[in-house]
Amino acid sequence: MTATLDISWIGALAGLALAIILILFRLAPTYALILGAIIGGFIGGANFSEVISILISGTQSVQGTVIRIIAAGVFAGVMMESGSAGTIAKVIVDKLGGTKAMLSLALATMVITAVGVFIPVAVLIVAPIALSVGHKMGYSKIALLVALSGGGKAGNIISPNPNTIAAAGGFKLDVNQVMLGGLVPAIFGLVVAVLIASLIKYKGTKVTDLEAAELEKTSPTNLPSLSKALVAPIIAIVLLMISPIGSMLGVDFLASLKIDSLFILPFAGIVGSLALGKTKEILNYCTAGLNRMTPTILIIIGAGAIGGLITASTLPAEVVALVQSSGISGMFLAPIAGILMAGATASTSTGVILATGSFSTAILNTGVAPLSAAVMTHAGATVIDHLPHGTYFHVTRNAMGISMKDRMKVVLYESMVGITMTIVAVILYGFIL
Image (tube, rainbow, N blue to C red; front, side, top):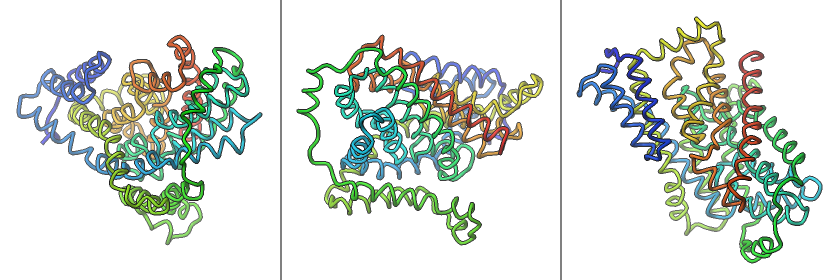
């Protein structure tokens, strides 16, 4: 029904702007997005029944993403609640430690984010280890957080997390394609995070003796072994990568074996639980994982509503016309959309959801390939997704026990990591591939 509508681009833009303003004023993002879609629809010239049609068609369009994120909750719950992520992080830091401390901390956060742990949770898991290392080496908390956050950002664009699922869904791709596509930008992001953290490692507030003593008291002692902790992520990664690796090697049988993440992630999580000897905890892990996914799912429903408004309006056509008349290459629209939407919402996943839901049609209409668009949008969403009006800023600040002033200093360094990954993604997918 929405295909016959002709909503003014002014209404769509007004609705999107209103939604962002309401989010900045701390209204629940789901309500802000739905309200923006409703008001924008009326401003754009729709009547009551047409606005309802826009909302329904928009929210229906994101159901594939929603069900995949629900399925991913099983895997995330196992990794977070079983202690597997903590084991992986601790082993990486213990093996590399010493003079390679910043690399080990950044890599640990990158790896556990890449295997499906949410980036705020990844920082929370590695933070006690980082503070302990920082106390021994005399490193500043600012530098430690740069390593953790930068590594987490790098892992986030190659993970089966909601943001990657949303990027894939927005451009009708498999999750594994977007994960693999973000690998090179992620490596550059890791390198830059380690370099910046190493350059400023003695600048700023240090970890006190009292904080170190508290860490010793609260450190977990019942973590699973590494071999057991790796079962779930290895199964997930192997199954997700079968098809793209088969395509790269020219093996038709493997290339045609396309198993959706909807099946792979719950399967990997359940097998991982069995390997950990936690069969009785599977239901608890599923519940915990679903609880962590619920806020993202609700935001996606709201983003679907605003996306439905924009799709039904003339805004995508106007954006394409503006890009073409300005002489700017259309490929820049993808990272710009990711940067602006993630910055407005201070969230990687919400930013990607909004950017793809609102501008995927416009981006593809400029001639950009779906995979290129997904990777560039995804990378762009890491540039300013850590601003103070989001939860990540405050969760990471509390995890490291730093002042607001020191946390604000980290924002610039985090953006440098995100900008690096975005530039690499644009060069790779906009000019080379």
